[in-house]
Image (cartoon, rainbow, N blue to C red; front, side):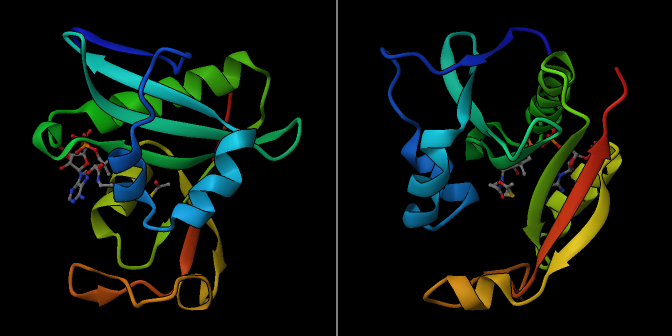
Length: 155
Ligand code: ACO
């Protein structure tokens, strides 16, 4: 996408709390994975509009733990551009698999991730009902299970 600049967060940047929470409503979970991850910020014409977080599991597998685009900028291809960027960075860093997880109710996200070549690889049953204090809903469906999707990377 033209004019979209994606780069790792640096010391002078403000942490995009609202974006992080829009993808993952658990502040506690974010605090657990963020120190071990790299957060990438996307700027459109110098305006911060999106972020994603890469968390390495080991030398072969790395996961997009959090991905979000500002409401006002959704539906313009930025999410797709973030996923492409994550794939390229994971390939450049020598990883074999890129993972991403989303809920059973996240119909749009499941569409986007599968269109970008991710395949459902496992299901963490009752992940949301066991780990989140209040019930979460998307598209009128309760978020109960975490669907993990994997993209096998080809250098
Ligand atoms: N509902 C329906 N369709 C969607 C949705 C959605 N929520 N998100 C993306 N799509 C579709 C688009 O229609 C588009 O389809 P097309 O290529 O056939 O035209 C395609 O996916 C690409 O869409 P983009 O414009 O690239 O996606 P966008 O910039 O809107 O970003 C994102 C997608 C990141 C999911 C955004 O909607 C968002 O920030 N949502 C709120 C936070 C969130 O749910 N994050 C993901 C949680 S899971 C995790 O973080 C690991």
